[in-house]
Each structure stands twice: as structure tokens, then as C-alpha cells.
Image (cartoon, rainbow, N blue to C red; front, side, top):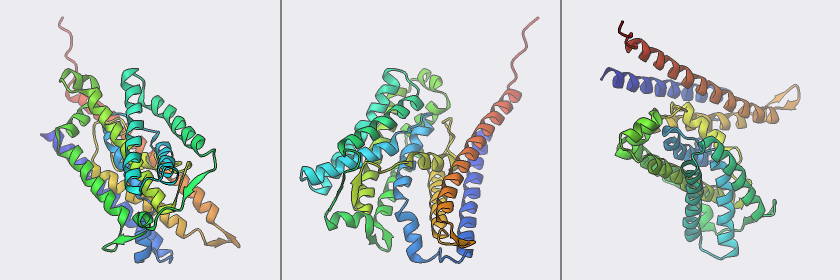
Length: 344
């Protein structure tokens, strides 16, 4: 009971610290006098980052199980192209095309899962390979430069209109977040993912269907990547092969920043959401100060580069914290349960 309580306290403290970081970000950017807290800008913070939030939510069960998926950004690009082809070349209505696009994403996730479990390959290597494969297919379908646009106004409303003052896609993200939260925290499947992430061999000995459960996480991640591609196409008004470039790094950063251990086994969905919000505010705030001038020169390029640098620093810091926490936990475990000395 003590161990369970300590872990819950750790997560609570981590989320509280992250909430404080978000508050400090808001105070900082608002104090710069760029009207950060206007209704329009707050709406844009979320509207322009929903796709990353969706990928982060999809990545949470994967990382909880001890895996990783570096291909979700490229899968977004491929799914965006597939959606464009279905609508503009094959004449499907956007809803049917969106459903098929989500299925294509799920197939991509199934490919990752199959390679990982069928050939016992490390998830990092598999998804690094499919990272290049999916992006290459997207570029091949579009000959490297072709994009699809001219979608119907009703479809574009998905990415550019509001419902009750909240961007439409934020409602979709909220529904996905609720579903992932329920899956991870209120089902046997979610508990099995934690067990697998903590000790795959122990989970197998306990009779858990490790391959099936982990495969479901990768398939779900692929499906959500397909959904994110559709939403991005609706927001931008076009579907192109370079959709989602770099999004995998941002999604992983949000997950790890939110307290999900990169080694698997521990973490929660609420932390992922807070990690995503923190990154969204950071990117938006840096964009809004990009028109400042220093010695007569605009800092737009500096702000853009600084955003990437800070994302990398945050990811490294979160990984270092996770590694240190794991090392400390192992050290305490060994002190509490020392090996029995051999009998003379």
C-alpha cells in the first residue's frame, strides 16, 4: 500500500509542477504585451496543436507498454495523401474518405506491430524504418510536390469553425482523451499495458496476451494518426505529403514531459494532456513574439529555432528525470530487499 501511495503522490506532484509551469508560461507571454490571453489567441493555441495532442494521446498506451512509435508523423503524411486521393481523384465524400483514412492508419500501426512481434524486432528500429517508408510512399504518391485542395466548405469547417466557442477539433480531441483515459485507467487492458511495460517477461508468466495487447496499442496509434491527418487537412485546406513532419518528436515530448516513463509501466493520461498544453503554449508564445525587433532585426527566425531548441531541451530533461527516477527506485528496492547471504 505504501508503494502505491508513493507512486500516486509522485504523479500528483508531477502534474502540479507541470500545471505551475503552464501558469508561468502564460504569465510570461502575457507580460510581454502580446495580448496572449485574448479569446482569439487562446482558441488558436489549441486549434493549431490538436494534431500533436492526438498523437500524444495515441502514443501514451504505446509508451506505457514499453514501446515507442517514431512513425506517427510520417503516417500522418501518408494518410493525408490517401485522404486527398480518395476525395479529389476517386470522388468519395469526406466522411467516407475520413473513415477509410483512419483504417489506412490502423493498417500502418498493424504493420509496425507485426514486424515487432513476428520478427522480434525492437520497436525503435521498426518504427524508424516505417518512419522512412510511410514518408517515402506519401512523396511517391504526390511526386514530391503535388497536393490536394479545393475541399468542400462543410469539411473545412471541421478545422476552422467553433462549437460553443470552442474549436471543433478540440471537441474531438476531448473525446479521444476521455476514451484513452478510460482505456488506460479503468480497464483490465490498461492495467495489462502497465504490467507489460513494467516487466514483459513477468506479464507473460502471468498469462497476459502480451503480443495482442501491445499490437492493439500500435494499431490504435495508427488509427489516431489517420484521424489527425484528416483534421490537419481540414484546418489547412489541403492534403500534402509533408504533413506531420516533426510531429512524432513533439508528441513524444508531450508524453514524457507529462510524466509517462519512457521505459514503460508508469504514467497517466492527465499528465500527457498537461504536457501537450505546455508545448502548445510555448510554441504559440514564441510565435507571437517573433515580430519583436532587436537592433533593427526581427527575431522571427530566432524564435522559430528557439522553439525547436527548447523542445529538445525539455525532452532531454524529461528523459534524464525518468532515468534518474528509475535508478533511484532500483537502488531503494535493493536496499529494502537485500539478497540473502549464502549459507556457510
